[in-house]
Amino acid sequence: MIAPALLSPLLGTEALFDQGVGWFVLVVVVIKVLVAFAVLMGAVILMIWFERKLISDMQSRIGPNRAGPWGLLQTLADGIKLFFKEDLIPDQSDRFVFKLAPYLALLPALLIFTVVPVGGIIVISGHPIQLQVADPPIGILLVLAMSSIAVYGVMLAGWSSGSKYPLLGSVRASAQMISYEAALGLTVVAVVLITGSLSTRRIVISQSPNFWDWNFFRLGVVPFILFMIAITAELTRPPFDLTEADSELVGGFNTEYSSLRFALFYLAEFMNTITMSAIVVTLFLGGPDGPIPRFIPTSDVWMPILWFLIKTFAFLFIYVWLRAALPRLRYDQLMDLGWKRLIPFTLAWLLLVAAFVLSGWWGLGIALAVVAAGFLLTRAFAVGQGREDLDQAVLPPIGRRVLPPQLLRTPPTAGDVGPGPGSEGAS
Amino acid sequence: MIKPTLVDQYLAIFLLLVVGVLFAAGSFVASATLGPKKKPSGAKVAPYECGIVPDKEPPSRFPVRFYLVAMIFIIFDIEIVFLYPFAVIFRQLGSFGLVEVLIFSVVVFVSLLYLVSTGALSWGPAKRLQSGMPSRTSESTITRITAEADGPSTHQAA
Image (cartoon, rainbow over all chains, first blue to last red; front, side):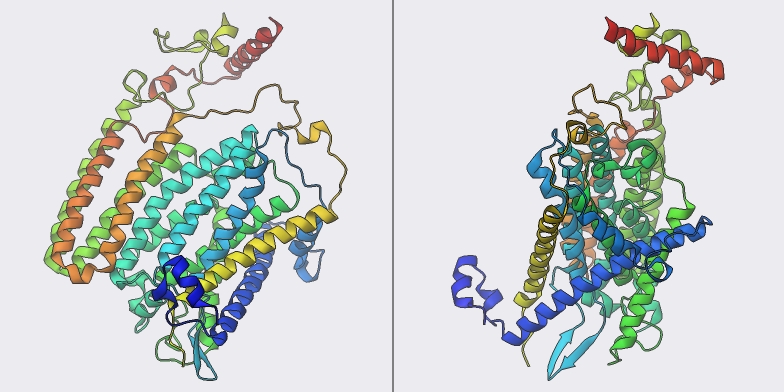
């Protein structure tokens, strides 16, 4: 027993502790945590190998093939190598924050996985045990909270490096991640609305009885697509990988990191990819549910886990596929997509779902309102386009480069060309 | 049979947090023990500039637009925060809840309309500057590059 009498007055959480925690529960929790950690690490090692191998297949290269069969041990070899590398801390950096950032990147990636239901319930000597590390009633909020904290890891890493490429990468990354977090949060609200619970296990169970009860179908495919776009941007995976755009920013926020600190960022990135694939499966594709056997009546242990793994793997494949197939977006395209398309669209779809759950007439009314709002938004786009012009602009335009006056087709007016190195050089 | 309690759910999350911290700290210690211990040279710990010796202070300012995005985000994040409790008890609230959220969403949507129509969310290059750009020929590029290269170098020489 953990001493509840000792802790509860300190924490003010009598309600949490009044059941007490038996030794059995404690052992189960410890085993769950250790297994989850080991499985995640193994999965990350395999995922890095899988991505490298698949992308080289798609690009007609051979890829890693030296360490172990089919190069399977390549990631492990790279990891061990990084242990022996020099751990540099740039002298311009903020040392404490520089060291803190890898923790802030890794821990959220780990913790998100705790709420993913991997399988059903197994019974060991009369004790039912959920195949899920934890099922707190706030389940899906933990995912959102952790993905918000992950922004800090990226932002502080770039800021504390004291170098220009990491700073640019991290500023871009944080703006991108918070922009798409809004769209992400709104799509998840639709899932919560139809389930009536934040707990991930409840969300999975509510999708179970029939194949068409998957949220993918129930919410009408659109939220799933929006969620996939938002989550890809949130993960800063291609085609949204502006944060580490190699051709402009060297390596983005982790340019100054070396040795194991770099390895941890890399680890966190791939762990996030895996956990977010699992979250997509949980929210929209019924988690461990599969055609045979159905998740709810079955007491089978292995088939649900197998279904879960197959579905998660399919998404991992899609992420690699996207990377091989799509070119990177431009920054203004990225922000336009996030703010001007995804956020209004997700909000409209959420209201539509809510209205149609209530009654058909409400649904029809909201649908009309959404169409009207769409027209308003199109008008606002048109007005906003005009405002990008210099003399009407609210803010100085991004990417404004001062050109030598002889190069301008139209002679510059006063205020159009400010003092700058370019104009000095021309005179 | 033990009743499922809340505390063991949160305990698992906390334990994984501890395992994660231990793993990260442990690997830093291992890396410090195994890695080379000689003091790195001044060039090595200098900010990375693709091999060029940095001659400017590291940048501490970036476009104000990024701050603006962060501020706008707060509005939408707060909206999402309010939507979650609504979504959980939506079936109990019925049409009352829908109307409330509708009014709330309209307010947020109007603020989005305002932001879009003032161009606060536009990141593209200014239209005027684009039309002022010459059509690119190899000659114009050479002129431009020369003009740009002359600028800083004459500045430094002075």
